[in-house]
Every structure is written in C-alpha cells, then in structure tokens.
Image 1 (cartoon, rainbow, N blue to C red):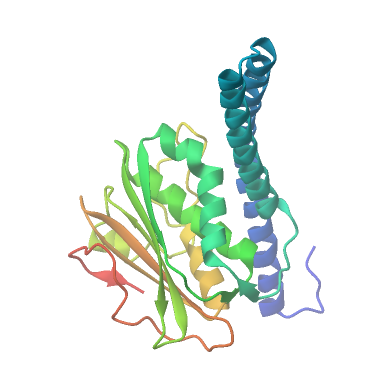
Image 2 (cartoon, rainbow, N blue to C red):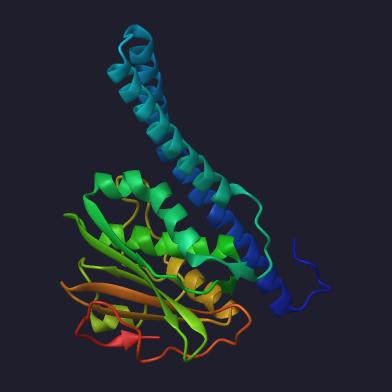
Length: 269
C-alpha cells in the first residue's frame, strides 16, 4: 500500500526501483539453469580427467590430465565469479565501474545461450576509463540488449560489442550492434515507449517481451546522466550506443564520432 505522506513523484520512483529489482531477480533466475548446466559440464570434465590421471601412470597422460583439469577449473572460476558478480549486493550508489568487466561477466553468463543460437560475438574492449555507474543496473541494461540482439537473429549471426573512449566529452561509449531483422522507422520511434513490444510472447527459452525492457533501459541510463541512441534498418540490423560519464567527469551528449558498423537509416535518441 502506498504511503500517503509521499508525493506522487516519490511513489513512482519507489515503484520503479522495486520493478528494476524484480527484473534483476527474474534475469538472475533465468540464468541459474543455464549456468548450472554449464558448471555441471565443467565438473564432469574435471572428474573424467582426474580418473584418467589416476588410471594411467605415464607422465605424458598425467600431464595432459592436469592441464585439462586446470583449464576446466579456471573456467569454473569464471562462471562462479560472473554469477556472484550479478547476484551479490553491489552498491546501489553510482561509483567508479569497469564496463569491460561488466561486458565480460555478461558474456560468460549468456555464452551457452548465444552458442545455442549460433551467435558469434566480436568484442573490442579497448582500454577505457571507468565510468560513474551502478554496476548492477548497467549490467541489467547490457544483458537486455544482448538478449534482444540474439532474438533478432533467428538464423544466427554476428554480435559486436565495443567500448570507445570519447575524450572530447569525457565519456565512454558502449556499443551493441547486431545484424538481425532490424526495425522500420515506425517501430523505431516507439521502442522506448513503456509497454511497447513487437514480440508475440515468450520464445522457446521462456524470454518474451512486456515492452518494458527498453523503456527501463533508457530510464536507467538517463538516471546515470548518460544517453542512449539506437539506429536500425529492416534486414540490416540494429545498433545501440550508450554513453556514460567517465570517472571524475561530467556527462555530455552523444558525439558524432561514435563509430560502429554503419546502418543506413534514421535513428532515435
């Protein structure tokens, strides 16, 4: 029940925060099954090579077993660190945050799903400054964009994720570019509207659209003093550019220097 002592604006802000928290828990829940399956595969690799090392006494076989066990253990560490990174109670305050770390953790969490749908990922995570952000919220935006990109490429395809330092505006650009179905100008003008969706319902992975995803993404980015821009064209794909203020700097508007695979179409900011 709402608190009558709070203004309508304060109540809306509280509801928005509760919604974001619920969405984050839902996203985490979806990933549990995927990461559990992947982690089980890693454990089976460790178990099988441990048995092989015990079964054979020659140095070459044991060396191979130890190398496989080491590689699988390092993979298990990556998976657990990524899950914990998303699940742990990171500070809800805006603070210095590494976007490259968020990208790497998100791709580990979604790797099995992307592989299943034959999505090849190309990353260019150049050495950029940390940004002022709430890590959990920006990761939620990033994973939303990656999942949307995967759903736009029904037959598989390429996904490009890039970081670029916009030194002129003291900001960092996070670029997510797919080569999927794209959007026509009419759809493009509505994608940030609350509850707007082009999806007919959950896909076979259980992910669907309430239409609230991109609206929430824009709200999160704007609350960070950032900007989000999208360009798209039917049959050519979609590119989202997120600009966030770097540490100890003020945010600025999107510059014309943001570089990514070109899409000849109109854009929405």
